[in-house]
Amino acid sequence: MKIAILNLMPNKVETENQLQKSLGQNDYGLEFTFLRTATYQSKNSDPGYLEANYKIIDDVLSENFQGFICTGAPVETLPFESVLYMDELTQIIQWARDKTSSSYYICWGANVALYYFYGIEKILYEKKFSGVYDHEIINPGANLMDGLSGTIKIPVSRFAGVRKDDIDADPDLELLLYSEESGPCLIASKTHNEYYNFNHFEYDADTLSKEYHRDIKNEMEIDIPVNYFPNNDPNNDPVKCWDIHGTLFFNNWLQNMYAHSNSNKAE
Image 1: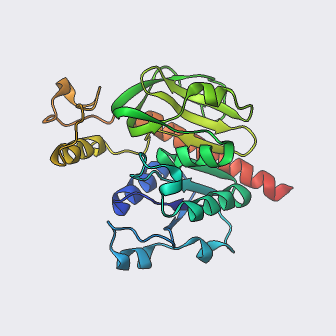
Image 2: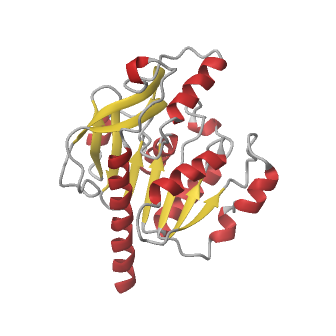
């Protein structure tokens, strides 16, 4: 199966590795194509690397992809209209809805997709949510919840989210995972086979640690990530307690995408 990934994160290689590793524990023989924006040049990436390893949307319009992923980006506090590549981004996610079997949006990418497709406004928090939060499965029988049970632990790292009431009010949207502390996590579109995850099943064990120490270095006011460092000590190595749940989730998504793609071929 072919998956296109629009990587909007500053550290491209780290995000590439996280997603390929998270999605690679199966026998689907995945082929990844990484996309970049044509209308905005990343300030944190080597242009030569992007030219060699990334494509723009015009390069792949004639190709067939089963899946699409859109990452987050460090622009959560900006109004959507102030993001320089917003017009191109909405064109890409509309293409993904029209031309692929399933889409998966992460963090700020989830905010953008819900705003563009459903008009759901983001809410900004007073401070950054950072840590490993417990999440409740709202509907255990829902698509992608197969094999998941009990409390689901997921890394959270964001300044923005959405209101649960706004999700519940839209008949096409279904809330799948929810935290009493950090709010809506995973949301599904009932008719478009799209999934919007404000949190990070794909994170490595040390990703929140790197972010925390980076933020401290940049003199940001931030708390120690909750439920993350053993004994709440940033000098201790964290444990990837979300690994099994993340693997189950991604394999469920791939299985769903595979079935949906074959169903479309049969039609």
